[in-house]
Image (cartoon, rainbow, N blue to C red):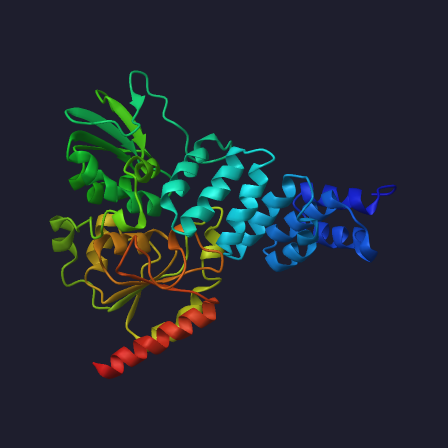
Length: 382
């Protein structure tokens, strides 16, 4: 607008989500060696939103010693975007010296978890419940206290399965541990109920009206690793789910293909688009290398999907719920990870959460080409 300075126009663009414009304006404002720590932070935020992490670091690192909490916090976010987890942890700890907020603690938790520091990571992960826009909140259940890890012998507990379908599948592994001493009720998405039911005494559909009464305490599923003191070496092992017999009978002999593919993550997830292939056409090399069934569209609930998966030789999936299901069933899955992947996948080709999963990293084209070559090699050997 007329009369506004470059810095003012940049700030307005950033507030309105016009991140490319904001980044360009902040670069203009900071040209010729101008020193402005607030502008550098805001410019780095715009670049982070654009996933231009290296540029953001080049812009902000010269201000690393500034006495402004936003500097180390934003540096931590940039390092996290590059999966430089140790540097991210150091930056977040520096930010804590100014003020520790739920957002900061949650960011620190994710970096610690990615490094495999589950003891401290899951402790800080509890801060998610105090982040204003986080999708999970503490239950408001009169007469029911939150379980804090005390003995459950002879008691009952209601478990609210958190967040997306993949999250609910991943942390269902803790239900048998609870059930050793307590009566267990589970609130999960109805499409998962056939698989979760054998692990609980009662199952309630969180996507439909329900009443759960008579429980002594409640807990959130993603708090269970903290309550059980989980380390990498004590993760409850997979497989822990099984295909219900009725579903196995329903699908017997109906899946002639050998390889399943899932190419799109949940579009309602904030990172869903980043985890998804831009187009299923990118899978053509895999289709040329094997007999493929596209499992992107649901064919019933997750009991149906489990019955289909166990008839395949392999699932190839982006980071989304069917990959978690394959891992929970102990079935082979090649998981194609976006450049900025979630903390649970750590680094490397393996994950302690799902030994049957193999993790692929790189560009979509690189990962698909590699998968296709390996399928062709396996076919030539058979």
